[in-house]
Length: 427
Image 1 (spheres, rainbow, N blue to C red):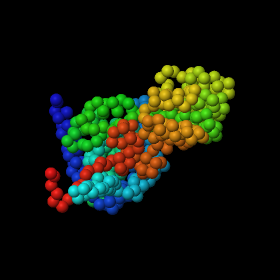
Image 2: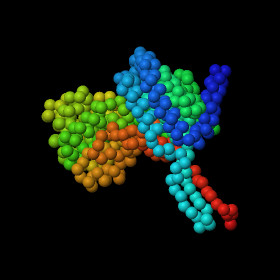
Image 3: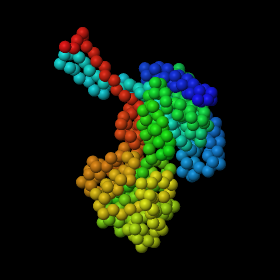
Image 4: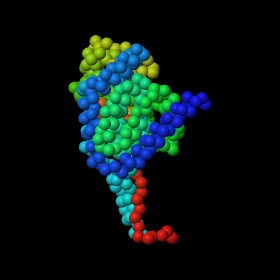
């Protein structure tokens, strides 16, 4: 190992050691102090808007020069509206109940022992992410409120923006008397820093990667720290035989068009054969009018061609693909069974939705589909921490262990047993 790697390993261990010390203080910090830090941090982000946006413009220029696509640039971009949304999300986290110390279960044993299960922080969270600078502020808010320290490891594309956001958040920490190491950006673009941090299982308690498949694989394969995956979202909407045409148009357009670069954007439309002739033409026309490229199986291609809606034949790998763009795979399926089979084969455990007026179909879809969010008669875009009432989210876990779905405050805790007795001994 050369001296440069030794120095980098030492720097990362020092960062993680400081975060561990901060986590110990945060674990018992009063709720009022944590909330004060969050509110002051949100105010500082708004006050430093020009500095943050200038840093973001530098990141955007570098990413464009590197040839990043439109979806990537959209995820990276900040503007006054998005900064206001970030500040609002932090304020909402501050207004939520503090999970630390919450008693989730309690009982009394026959021998008189009082047993409780109590929420406690995880410790130190390592957040590894690409292109989404909002993650820096929202993850910092969620971790501090839940008593965790966080190390924020952006890709080089979002480093300037993340540093500027975290500098503003640090102002809030300082005002509330909380350590700066509670939320800190790893200040290097060297990718080896990530791998050095992932070896520190004595200091870091959880790693959460958010990004493309290559990032998720790299973190999962090289980490000694437990990993919760925020994997890609191949999200489906199934239009059942009883689906209303107006609602079908609204859900398909919202799911695909509102923000196609988001992980909860719609990537595949499934249509029941009995309703395809009625539903596909208006839905396809509305999507095409919004600039969506429709990649269709033979049946849907024929139906859309008859209605004069532009479409192309799907390739085999278009089903099960995360486009993150104005592209949608379309398939006509014989029935609900076939829709469930398609989702089981091509879904990524992220978000699955059904539009139906048949209660039995809705309940079966809820029961048989495995995904972090199963949605009935609403857009896939609602699988989001803020939309589901969690405040912000640190990610949407597509793992089944520890957390599944949007990770808010409760998902950043674990539980310990607290046992109180009066001198009992075990026989």
